[in-house]
Image (cartoon, rainbow, N blue to C red; front, side, top):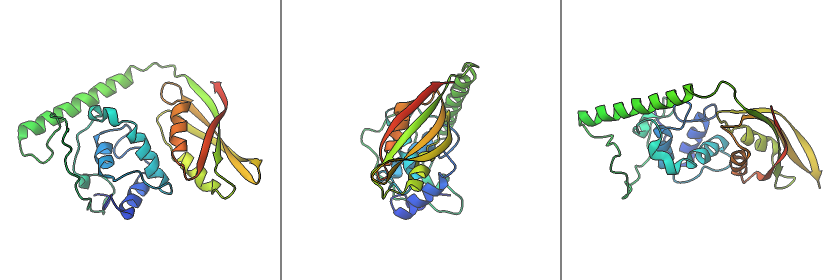
Length: 225
């Protein structure tokens, strides 16, 4: 398993293909698996790797709380598609790394047991939190206007990038192209969101991150369901 060398275009392409139908490296919530792969990257993927860029921007928003995310970091070779070997050069350890970080390469059985126990406790806390959420879920129907830079922007690619954004509580709907002027068209796309999980500010941040294609995003309509 692995992504090849994540510091090269080839490795980033493998990551992009891996994330085509996934929101996270493992499971359905951000975890230490995402942090391990994120930290191996030299920077943000290019705009044509829309799935990898969408994932990168999403995980970047968790940097202040990355230490509290569930799971235990593993070597890069234990993530990604099968049949691909990890060849990413290891980055030097940060000087201010938390004292309670787990040594993944140690042989101390007590540390392994402690890491496993911590992982189980975090997963149990997360599952308990999910089980307590109210039965009635507030939702909203949103209509977004996504504007390109000019009439030469690939609108099919722009829409592909927008739809590549996958969040818990977000469902994309129908879309159409509307003329703006001077041969330029904007993408108008509908979505339904769960109010306590997805907000318009979050959508704007993720959509405008595809800066090679997107000039701006506006909310054309917002209705409670």
